[in-house]
Image 1 (cartoon, helix red, strand yellow):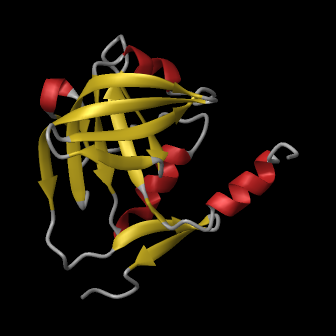
Image 2 (tube, one colour):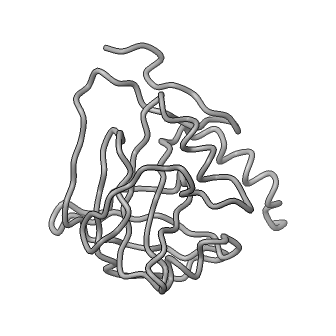
Length: 164
């Protein structure tokens, strides 16, 4: 079999509707760092574990690698601007963004549909990514009235497209 072309792989994967998260941590100097990610998944109920995959080329790689935990913020449809801000390159993503210290002082952003505050439990090599498994130490979640922000075929979508 010929090798899988990375562009074809990316196009095929884009057909999977994902949620959109902003994941935050503190770097070694205690400064907040974060990024937009759709590579988030739950892993286990007992203990409560979640994971996300961090690209080795990410400008936040050192911060997450040095950190002892992270916070996953599942975004609502009204938070696309936050997703775009934390996906941007070459800016201070936290400039002008309100946040408060949560578990272990990790940056907590307001308004997420749900939030998972985690201690780093494991990290695994995953090709050009690092798979970071976190044990959830604190969580919050909203009611069902707000739609979620999703990502599909290279663009943001609202799911469901109307509140239930």
